[in-house]
Image (cartoon, rainbow, N blue to C red; front, side, top):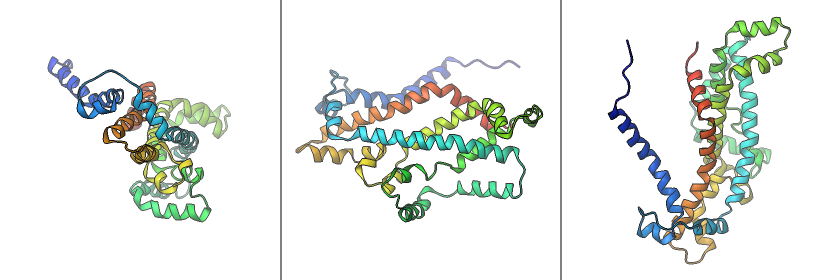
Amino acid sequence: MSQTRPGLAQYVLLALLAIAFLYPIFWAVSSSLKPAAEIISSPLSLGAPTLDNYRAMFADVPIGTGFANTALVLVVKGAMTMFFCPLAGYAFAKYSFPGKNLLFGVVLLTLMLPTLVLIIPLLLEMSALGWVNTYQALILPGSIDAFSIFWMRQTIAAIPDELIDAGRVDGAGEFGIFYKVVLPVIRPGLAALAVLTTMNVYNDFVWPVVAVNDTSHQTLQVVLSTLAQNVTGNRIGADFATVWGELLAAGSIAMLPLLVIFVLLQRHFINGILAGSVKG
């Protein structure tokens, strides 16, 4: 039975949905390029583009420090996630050892714990270690998380056992099999995990704002949350329009990295989602 091709009404509906989702982003970016007064007086007009909001924002807000701290946390924490979680997923998917199902069940149970439940125990642990207001507190908690292990386990479980056995017959060691046989096969799943990890670390707010109160260690999301205070504190008499102009400028810059990463990896991300959702 032949499939019905999408009709004009479906294309129109999809176009309207795309406009509805993209218009807030377009408005935020275009408004950040308008004079601050026009954002309030003429919110829907385009106006003459200007970079005044961006210049003022860089002068009033330590957004560069936020970007640098977020980049450091993202690189180190992301590297730990991408290295250890596939190894753990491989062990749960392809090895048999005593207590395997019980241990994996415990890992899955941690997914049910809300983040807020873990805040106080983690903070007490960081305090006991003397890691409050340090990069260790930002990087280590959650670097090896249950979801990433579960995701890798489901992805690797779809690999035929015969493929791994063939590697052993050829004389490859266990790490050699993992890096030369398993990793090339699960590349789409790794790309999806990389995108999800980047989004989680980049957008994380609750833990950084609790673990760090030193401005030199604040991540981008914490800096953005205090933007209005920084603008009014650094500029006497700053009005509502000025705050909004700089807030939109900072938000426009903050969303660019994630947008670029998703555009570059969207094909691998979608393939990874589909590969991880079906066990063949």
